[in-house]
Amino acid sequence: MSTHIRALLMGELEALRHEPLQKRIRAALGDETVVDSTRALVVFEPKRVVPQYAVPETDIAADVVADGGGGVALADADAPQLAGRTVYDPSVPFAVHTAEGEPVTVRARGSDREAPGFRPADPDLAGYVILDFDGFDAWFEEDERNLAHPRDPFHRVDIVHSSRRVRIERDGEVLAESSRPYLLFESMLPVRYYLPREDVRAQLTPSDRRSFCAYKGEASYWSAGGLGDIAWSYPAPLREAAEITDRVAFFDEHVDVIVDGVPAERPVTPWSRR
Image (cartoon, rainbow, N blue to C red; front, side, top):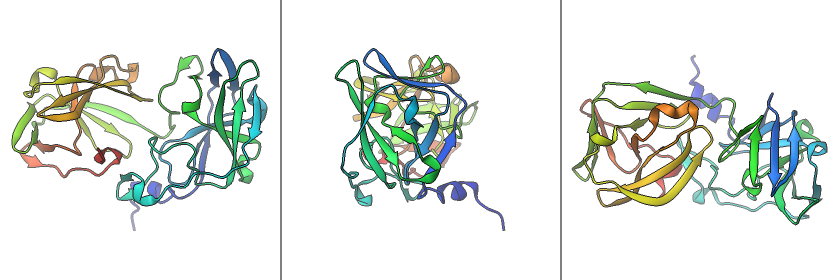
């Protein structure tokens, strides 16, 4: 009997997972580099879909102090959903731990800066500290700045040019229509349709909202059709996503997408919750 690969991957969601990296990983607190490691791992705590870096404690040039407390609990009912499963995405704070272990604080020796960490109680991760990406001021993979969160070595982004007819509607109003979309396929996420700005019929009103993607860069958001932050674009994406520069994508979770005349089901993802 054939195995559905997505089901296989999601079947390990409840497990503590890790993967060694071959990259040099560095992190700073203020102007002080406190992490410098060529032995880093990415670690997914159970239910997490985005990893954190873990490094040997000996590669941390700072004091690592036990907090003496446990993790923060989160009810599954309050967690995001993806592919019919409860998941913990980056909106779930680092302090919510789903693995056994000990919360710690990483304190810079040359300043009063500090960041959260976690010592997992797992023999395969003995001597390692998982670090809160958001708690540090800068991260680097080799000499390149890293945004948003660690890159998952098994995560893939493909951008494919298409001539399929894509129409975006909301409550019967056509917001955009194009026969020259770029389709962006990203692991475990629904396909996103990036349309030329001139094929958007609705008036786009810029928002103050910004977000960061480790694979695409900094996104700007737009209101359209009376809906706030319903679309986004990347004015200066990372080089791997340069093709979608200034193109507009809509949240499939909140609009109706019709492709070649066939309505698509609205996906259920962490962005389904507004």
